[in-house]
Every structure is written in structure tokens, then in C-alpha cells.
Picture 1 (cartoon, rainbow, N blue to C red):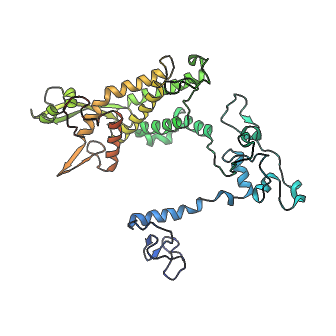
Picture 2 (spheres, rainbow, N blue to C red; picture 1 turned 45 degrees about the vertical axis):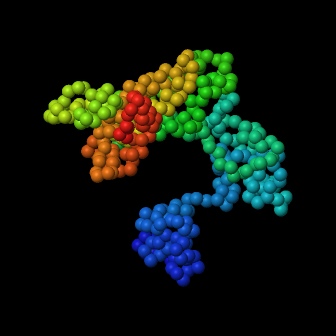
Length: 394
């Protein structure tokens, strides 16, 4: 039956689908889904199950799709083409290929022409529209281990989308994301890195065996220079998102913390007692001249770490090396200030310590992760890194 208020399919004890203590409850109703015996049911699990149930119609089995839908997925490259060497299929695959298994008279009625696909991954440097069969079915020339429903990642289509988001001026509707510059950079840069956009084929320190462009000079490669320019712009944008802040710590805490002592000005701040010392801190805000925040600092540090990894893995003559060096230098100069900023966000209640997302901001579990991840990357969790005997307050 259907709950009249929420229009959610529910089951009563008399229904065959009802399984006692097997699914989450919703009022007097219970979903018939198989649940773990160790799961503690709560309002949160009920909401999760409701969400899964609402989303279920959007998840389908690929073999259950119609021929036209399968053909569309193949035409855009999300499914592989069926090579001619595969043994004679039957069912929907046979119809798709014009090889109706039971009725050979119907073969002529089915369009068995080879489709074409616009391949964004232009491996051989010629026109983007490639022959569908030649470029996609060769991997299965022997017809073995072929899965007609193996989903493919259209890599260059995603790269094109990400570069558009990264490089093209946003329409005015995106003004609401003005406090999310580091986030948008991290989301797009991280995805581009995972998709191999910066793997240019030149030997690197990590992969000296890559000889695709061994005899070419990367400084003469326009595409490489464009990517290097993009990395430099990323570092420049994040540098302008940095904001210095003046912090105050107790004299005893500064004296016992070598890192804070390096940042201390040696004088009491305005309005502070002599027992409170000014310390220079800072973090990354959502944009230029915005107050530092844990979340945007997390995104900025991870983005700069990606640029550092991309650049410093190359030789010094490679165009990527300079932006990598810039990103590393920025992180190295600001790491102690971030350390002081993170410490200033502590909230100690009894024997429990939590952190705020920003000064006078909210306290939640995001702050723990957004602080620990950058501190780990920047080596700020290593006791004894800066002195022999040191108890890290983090």
C-alpha cells in the first residue's frame, strides 16, 4: 500500500514482503529490504532507506534496456562496440547487430550498418571523428573476454567539461559561489589529475621509462605550455585567497611550543594582558580578502599539493616544474601560520577538545578532518620535527 502523506510504499505484517526486524521502519510500516543484523535502526537509517527507495527507479540493469537505448550508449562511447569476431549472439545483442538468431529472414530489416562515434580522446592526432569499429573493437579482436555491458569512462569528454569550468568565465548566477574559489579549483584540478590530463608523455622522475615524447622538447610543446600556464594561474589564485590574522596565545603556551615561538612578535597585543602574546597566523579564505576558514584552507592545501606533485616530479627544465615550485614554496611559507590558526580554533570543554570551522564559527566533525588532513600533508603532526622534545598540542 502507499502512505498517503509521504507516498512511500509500505508493508504490513500480513504482506508477503514484510520481514520482521529485517528492514527500516517508517511509522507503522517497514521496508522489506535485507538489512545487516548489526545495524542499529534509528531515524537516520529510516531516512537513508527512504532515500534509497526513492532513487531505486533510476538504477537499471543494462541488459534490460531496449535496443535503442543500448545503441545510444554505444554511439556515445559509454559501452564498447561489439566486435565482428564475437560468436553469433542472440536476443537483444543479435537485434542490435542485425543478427536475429531465430529468424534469418528478418536480418535485412534491421539496420546493421556500423555506427560512428566522435572520439574526444584523439590518440593519433587526426580528425576527432573516428571509425567506430576500427578504434574501439580492436581490443577484442579475438572475441575473448568481451563484455558488451562494460561501462567506459569517456575521459576527454569529462576533461573538456572540467576545463570549461576551470577556464571559462562563469555566468553571473555563480556569484553565490564567490566564497568557494578554492573548492572549485580543488574539485576540477583533482578530477583533471585523476583523469591523467597532466600526463604529457615526457619522462618524469617517477616514470623515466615513458618515452612517448622522449626526443621532443617540452618547451616547444604548445599544449604542455598551456597546461603549465593553467597550473601557474591556480597557484596565483590561491595565493590571493590567503589572509593573515593576528592571534593571541598564552605566554606559557608560546614558550612551550617552538612553532608558536617562531611566529610570536615578542610583544603583547593591543588590549591584551602581558600574559597574552601576539602570534601571526593565517589561512585560506573563500576568495580574496575573505576571512580564513577550515574548509577552504583544506581545499587550497590539497590543490597546492596536487600542483606540487605534478611539478616537482618533472625535471627542472620542464614547464610544469616552475608552478610546482611556486606551490611548494607557498605551502612551506604558510605552514606554521596555518598551524597557529588551527590551534586558535580549539574549544576545550572538560577533557574534550573540538575545533571551530572559523573564528566564532560552528563546531562540527568537518573541522576535525579539515584540520588533520592539511596538517598531515604539511608535516605538522610529526612530534620532534622542529625540536628534540616537543609535545604536539594537535
